[in-house]
Image (cartoon, rainbow over all chains, first blue to last red; front, side, top):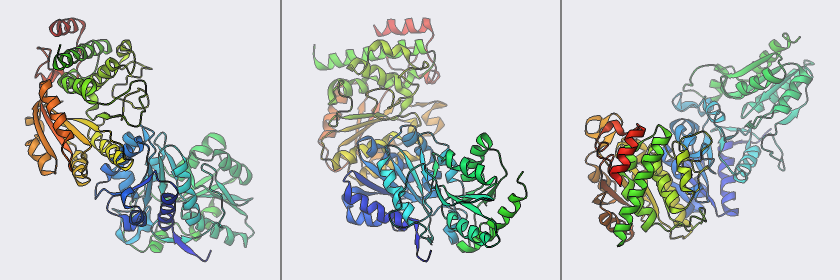
Length: 313
Length: 270
């Protein structure tokens, strides 16, 4: 886990590579290309890159038209604007129409850091996963990001890819096969399972390792696809370990925690604890400070596991 | 019979379909459908390169009805043009119909973009125009906006982008009928001066009487010869045009005619 790469960096590289392979790939940005990392695509393929200025709604609508004419547009912006400012355009021009538009949503969650609460998207997973026809990927590292981008291009329909600003550990080896809708068992457990997504997967692995030394065996399930959610993998982990902690860099309402709660309530009701951002907005600070303040470090996950184990029947 | 006479006749047929289908549906938007009928007739029966047997033909011209609530005018034109049987018009707004309350591209052949949420059609048209240029196809893209729709901020984002990207393969209409749901646009939220705004955004602007077929054809011909910028055709129209008791009556924006009103309207339309 020595190497650290931001998922937005991996996104930019994967998008550029896709552009080399497929002339139908086009990219749009809303004046944030250097931050979202669509810039290199634009530099390499200027005729296939459209900077739409600070106008996210028009970016999404234009992408819908490009897709209707056979292109595969990737729209990049910060998650807060791509999912929030342009929500109704995503809803009506992309999801309702089932058009082949991909949304690369960077700077998601509180690890956007110093920019603060106006920019920290804590609700985008919830509002994207509720949309019919939408696929939602939240990659945990650079390797998964490359897989998610390639999978998105192969899917005929709308895809939302959630990306982070900060460098995060590379968890997967080269050659990892990203299968849309298939959660990855990173660690088998016995006493409880951490179901994690995005940057919290690394924290979950660290928590599980520390608990191992105390003789507590924790499974880690990496849910890189929030929609369609992998019901089978979640239910299997729940049946095997009898308790689940969810971990996400998102509000505990409506995101991974919400999705897992829905699955468990219907298929396998067991004790569940959701770790993530409590029902509040972000604020300015260093990413590590914000994760600490919001209770989202490996230490907090360990506390959640120890609590949930006492509730097992 | 000359072509203009033929197109006037088509527009009259379209208006009769609008009245009949709205009467059958029991709800919908007659005013803004009737005001757009002459322009839509000119597009579908003169201007646009289409093949109803191949609705996905890559070289076809595209039309987006951004003011999607005027769906009946689009459906009537598509049916008359042969995209689906005319009888199907009478299923408008009914459960299971391909003729949704607002146009749905996934349900009905010939519908290029699902619309209904105002302000989104021009952006989609821009995307189609950009794709046509990338693919070196010479199709043209047409889009119709309502004047009330100009209230939407996204319209102006798209206006800026179309001029920035010099989309001369795109021509837009504003159906300037002067009314929105809550009343006259001058009272609710004035978009004036409409033509100056589009000109200021970098568009070539043509002003016409939107019920004069000759002027509509002239504007479309002029638009094709404009290079380096998109064209906006601001069409002065009458809401409810062709049915005397609906003309300029804001109450007919979103209310369907009752059976006796259908008969009176059809009698007027001949």
